[in-house]
Length: 256
Image (cartoon, rainbow, N blue to C red; front, side, top):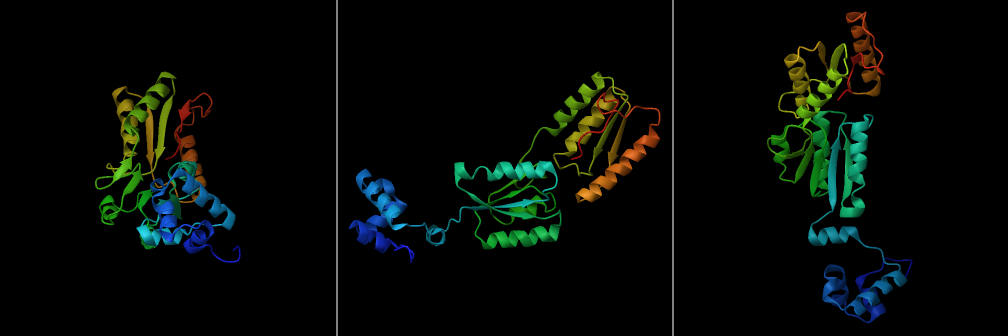
């Protein structure tokens, strides 16, 4: 038996049950007595049966696959987010097909077409390149994370209040200058709330601050180069200010 695939017919012969009974075991086990379920379960072990996932997909049309589009893996945020999503397999049983797009819109569209060919049951989108209206046109359950979401669902945090609390805390710690470094976001992206919250608190309380918005690069090398440029710029702009992060005299928040 171990030299060929074990079929329902093989299991039926081994247990003296009908093929219909074997089918019921896989599709509606509660319709069988516990004793008969145990007999079939033991037969599967004895015969070395392996589930045919493809046959199940063809039978019920459910692939149990979820597609994931992620911009990159070198930023800890995305790597940790992916790790948490993948860890749900044991709980929910969904498998994941992951594509890394590097923020390229056309590449993401190609990846989505590839995912659709696998009859995925939904997508998780961590990128921001394709408009939500286009994503909605695929007629699939889609969940995004921290992005423009007029036409799809997105899991967002209260970016504005987070910025308000962080800026207020730094102000209370007598920082000389508050500096916010960020990418350029349109106002309909939730992360824009971090920029707005920072500016509102600094303006309302007459806090000396600097807001630096620019493209921060798309690779570890680019990010390092650009952040070095920003640091040198701040060093020249505030020559008499301490830049000791430990005492937070000038703060450069995490780059998002």
